[in-house]
Image 1 (tube, rainbow, N blue to C red):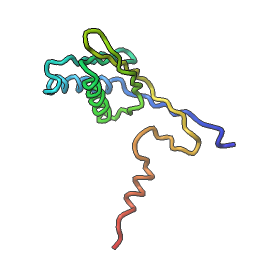
Image 2: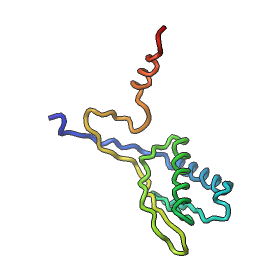
Image 3: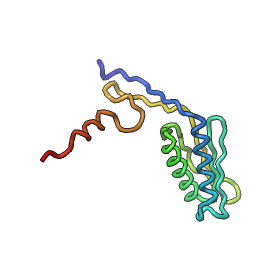
Image 4: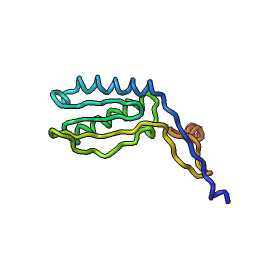
Length: 132
């Protein structure tokens, strides 16, 4: 009977930290050589992002930058719902990203932590020192 039940874990995110991460991404795009003279725009709405780039490769690079800056600012990657990369006018591509509280359904036996290594695993690793 316990296998039939599940619970939802909702993780809220700090909108200010997301804005800070996006500002860092914009600054890095402005200084990177591979983006020099290229179209690379990130627009933020209340609960969504829009990425406009010259090619799919640049759009994927922007996604990697956003994810790396979000991780450094302790934001879970589960808040991003990455849409498909679609063609926009003028030889450009666009990607819509929904941002919101990450929600996932877990089974009763799983951990409630939304990201990171559980404290039990960290303790087990620290105890696993070689004896000798």
